[in-house]
Length: 474
Image (cartoon, rainbow, N blue to C red; front, side, top):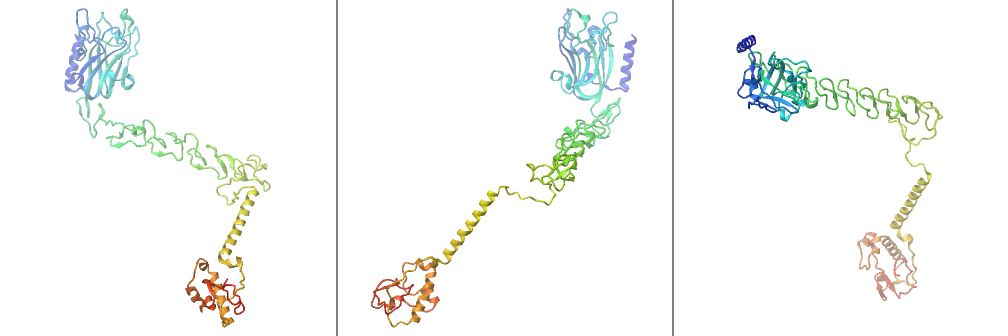
């Protein structure tokens, strides 16, 4: 009787200042894994757990079936709500029945139903660790401040007291889910101030994964993985994108090839060749060959002519091909002798060492020059290479004086030097070339009684009357 009085008083108090019992809303439904049927054909349906009656006697409780591997009861609120707490009433008949089947149950909330989710994808509010022969309390209130749609009670515990009956069983007489609509808080569910969602007790804004701050007005850094951060601090929850570090992932890694440590900024893996240091932001010595050690900057190798840990010491003057990096002893010519530090002014001929190839190239150039000189000479002075024929036959009239003959010879020697005249098969009359040279004289006019065989040759002339002219009649 005393329990009923306290329950009544609590109900009266909640009418004045209390969270809503979301289980009693018209949109709320309840299901369970299986339903037990008694010998009297009474079905212990899941709806008995949300009928508003908190009596823990057998007939007031829902009951799952036997011989199962799992037992669960799920309340679907019909939409997302801000949940404050969950209160469970389990079967307990003093002196007759103890809540031993209630051992090791779990309470989860989720955005998807139990048939489509596993426990890893839910939010855990409570896990009972009671072991036999102890039993948990039959009435238990569990804090569960989350935004969710589904509330799930589940167990896989097979109580030894049930032998020979096997399998886990749930007997929940009533489940109360206390909370408010999203955007409201407090016992009387007043509206949140400055944000869409707030803590159901304090009214402090609760941001989604991509915003933070008192009113959730600040965006998480886009350098955060999945752009997800703490709603209070803005610190990235799942780390940084490659190339950034810091709590908010807003500091770029300097020259890290494989990214850097999210907290310290230290480069992961090796630095690029030629760089070293914690953040790969320091240059190796210019005389290092193949880079240097990441942490200390010690050169892996030195270029020819340098020695020491940092390759900053010059080998002795008598070391023509470099020296040992550690001891400084002169070495023989290495295969990579042509390598030189990038800032030196010395440059070595990259032409092959063998003189045989050099001789071939020089000989080829000399032969090419000789051929070119001969070709040019042939084109410019062709008459120097012709064999001139002397004719025993003269031309023309004995009255022609030697001055005219000499002029004629000069004209035709000049014409003979012009390559264009060699291409003509027949010349008739005076040409522009002859007129340019001066007076024109037709050689055939000197032989009025002869027979003209071609335009430039007169035959059967008196050889005693006219001297033989080399460029005249043939």
